[in-house]
Length: 171
Image 1 (cartoon, one colour):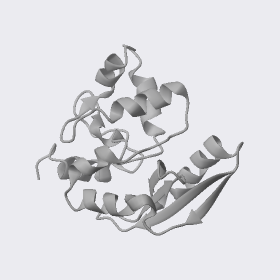
Image 2 (cartoon, rainbow, N blue to C red; image 1 turned 135 degrees about the vertical axis):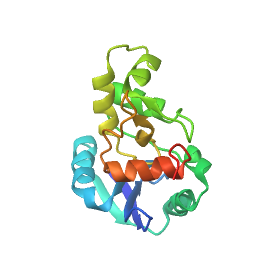
Image 3 (spheres, helix red, strand yellow; image 1 turned 90 degrees about the vertical axis):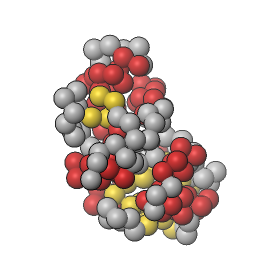
Image 4 (cartoon, rainbow, N blue to C red; image 1 turned 90 degrees about the horizontal axis):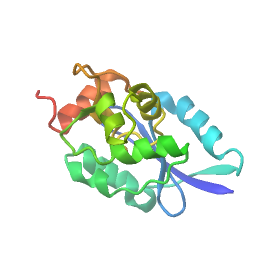
């Protein structure tokens, strides 16, 4: 049975759940108001093998590292390990998201092209939207072709805040 260590931290954008395995690989990072979505994804990905959620304080230092990100240490999220479940295509998209530099954005079509799948912008968008490790796997760095703040499961206001925090959007 998979043991998931969980903590919740306060952020400028509201409470954030952090779940990792016993090797301190992130399995889920989700805003508290969307915890139902997180639980659905956990069930989809881990129900077959079984999992148990265990309260932990700052497991593997991950909670503090995410606090540091919100306090301005933007590069720290590049160092945080994750072990996400999902389809091979989803994991390919999520891995590609981690290559978008902080302070930069890409649109869905560009991400599809980068993956060698031109024309798959909608599929990329769907995979982006099912990312279980928000902020760390920076799905907020993908925007609409015309520059619109589309498709962030945590809400467009959070997406704008994160992009401002990272220096893409000016105050």
